[in-house]
Length: 525
Image 1 (cartoon, rainbow, N blue to C red):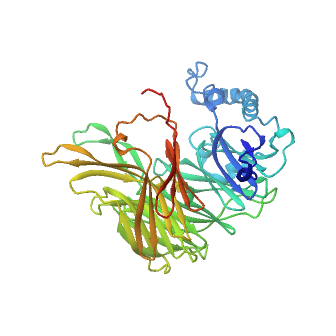
Image 2: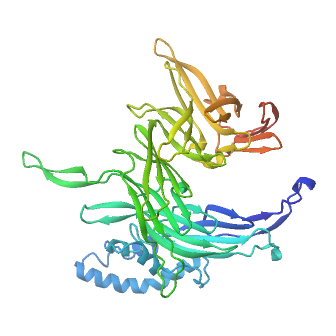
Image 3: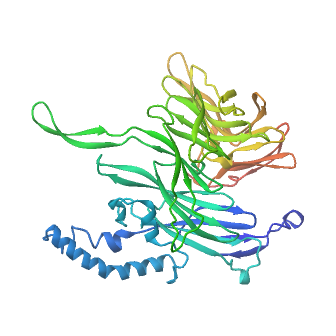
């Protein structure tokens, strides 16, 4: 990570270099709170080379042993491998023998499950599958010899992949795992939670826990006062069983043993933990039964003591949930409409309305029709209503597809509260069908759209194209590209997408300038 000083950028046009620091693992996410940065990295644990492989039942030294003999010999060998294994961990994670800021594995075992399957620390949902590290530092500090002074906190996790959420005082890591349910003979989905308190330019482990199901994204998590709220979906589970047909012939059959369910949990956050304190998050309350049969969560947004949840399969139930009593959260409102929302954004000073980005869909089949921008009234939680929506309609004789990066990347979404302007990236592909059934090139677009948002209106104002529409289907693309982002400076809108940067007047969309990053490109496909 490198830090640059921006305070003289406007006057001198320079970015003085302040300092750098090398980080362990792969970058996962980061948050800046005031002058403090908290960077999350993760490392995959290669247990096979040092533990699983050498202890495999198929090793030549174990092949001729019975089960009792194998367990005895494998245990002896494991004891001889522990020193090498732990030394390799210290080396690869650059802990230099200092584990003071690494959370104890035994605490995670205590907090996640009592299931015996969880105690196997190298298989399935074992707790040595990944290592996460939070590096915290003050961005405004002066760094000695241009080396950033930082504090690190680490933790072993049941997964090498996780979502990151942060409030002003806490960071949550949420990883996906599974645990075996012997009564049903299936592995059920589970989300593992690790909470870190943020205090200035440092972090410290604060809480651990788990809830059934998988979260959708970081918006499925929330820290409010002394509680953690988590919304999850548990997909239907199937198992393979041995059956016999009418002729007496055996065969394998796949049968469903659980239904898809959606739920929201409220957990307590321990004040602190130590020798006599438990770090485990305790369940305070839950809401179950969200959505209809086979529906899954498509969007979540927490707002103080309220949660908005969208589920979908063919239609879109939009739920309002009262969280004012952590021990008794309850659904107080429900609105069924066609299509679905992926991203929910509260607007207005009183946050009485919610802007949503998603897709319109056929209510009978669930087939996605096109990009949809919706405006909900949530001033009365018991009676949420749809004020209006804008749909990128397709011609009945055309085949089209439209979407926005803002559906799954909230940083691509921009709403200007004072001017009531919405700016989102849009991609549109259309091919027209002739009477004879053949297809011809239709309308293609890749860029940004702007909208005027009113009390009960969504009106598209102008479009900003980032590529010649005639070249979208046959242009030579390569991996280097800009993420879709928009910025507003002194009445001008700057947009970045794919291979270009453009500036336009915010009021009327008149172009100011364009930076084409492919200019002079000689790459051949």
